[in-house]
Length: 262
Image 1 (cartoon, rainbow, N blue to C red):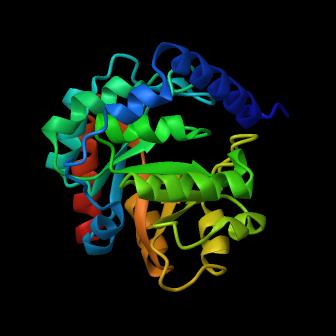
Image 2 (tube, helix red, strand yellow; image 1 turned 90 degrees about the vertical axis):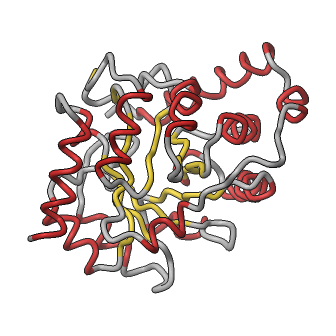
């Protein structure tokens, strides 16, 4: 089986090197604004009844194009209207059809936390996230050595960004430290893209009871969310289930209504 994650990470490091040739790290640092409002993903999930992190993405490596012509400025505000606790926006272009402009376009239109979802391998990307208005970033244990990830998490906090640490296996529990604001359990193996929601239940038992947990991938119905809530999960990252429909806003609204009434 081809390891998709290795291919994505190799391409991401290449992309970042190219970006640095166009705009240096020093230029990014000089363009930071210190008065930017920050919204807490962790607190939003802890205070929400649904905990839905609605994701904006146009494609995926396993499914191809999901919603090719989708515009963040149309769909993301719709997610907020429908009751999302936070939004996740894919900014990887080659494999997911996203870009930094998607967050930049959505940010002025909403007042809930935005997670920059990408394959973060360099502090350069953290500065990008801060400048375009993200409130949190995703750091993936499977994509980084423990020391690399810890250094990036510390830098994220220095910049005022929260960290969602994504793990997939018991072996990755060692990545958790005080700089991880939210712990995400990915039900999808990023090497093979095989999805199993039971992975969330297995790993939740190994995590501290006070951890703010997010279940990611493979969630398609409110009944699964209810089961996960009983297991201690506060957040549920759902994208394809909404994005594959003609009206993601209405699909999310119906999902949350079912979640709150059944």
